[in-house]
Length: 360
Image (cartoon, rainbow, N blue to C red; front, side, top):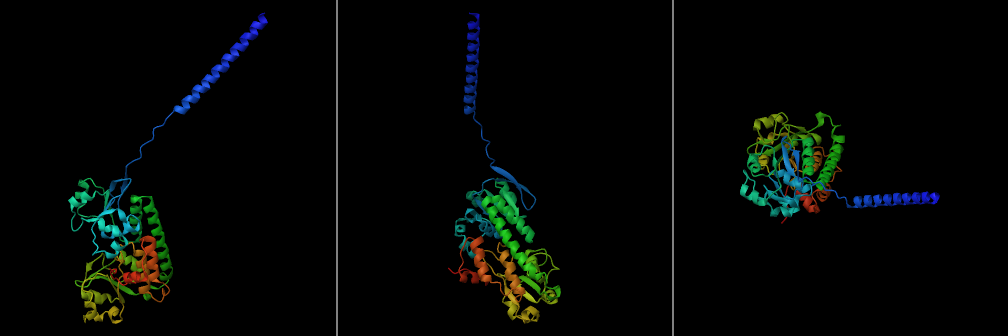
């Protein structure tokens, strides 16, 4: 009898242990399926450092852009965010090609001239304002609570920095486009350098870039103009003068004795060069080596996204024998399709190269 009682107790204890284990597993399973986690909210702002060295808090998502730097409106368009420009400093009259390739610019309010129209700017409700470094109305805009990013460049290294920063600010897609543009620019610079680096300085033409004829203003060293003259295989005749739009005398130009002259497309008083007896003494005029710079969505020669085309045009203009096979019309068409998101006709491309406005 005791033996049967002992066996019964063993069976009972075992059954209780098994039941307890099953209950524990069920409870554990129930707990794990009802556990929830709380998502961390995404940041709505971030801090960047602009090209003036100022830290700026900007929105992580930008859908409305105000651009007070003339050249940078083209950069934004080239990066694929042209439709987001709600306030600008340009008009269809001042930048006809840009408005042609980016017709949505017509919806942007013009609120930047020599000053800023704060009422119109606030009404346009931009997420960010781009300005050139040192713009005088920065304090007015920041006082209204709108982030201001200062940008500038004077050579190709700072140009790349400017475009990369803009791309990073505006989003992943624009950042990829900035990288693609820089890759294209680097490849063209390398292609030209492979040729022009082998030209002895004594064989390079002395080049004078003229911004205005009346009054006489030229572009010297520490400018993007000086950079592309060097890349294209020329020597800036005005390298001893620093900066853009520098006033000089006719005596100075005669002393420089330039072999080639490139006129900014909008240079004032340009016709004087061809009729004045003093200008006729300059070698570039004597030898008919005077050229008007192309102008597209922005003048190619200064601060333009089309600097990548400018260096090629300049190389063929300064050293035509070394770049005879370079087809600038086709290169311009290809560039606009890839980077300006617009299909040019052959006539369109030729008009840009000639510095002419688009046909109506």
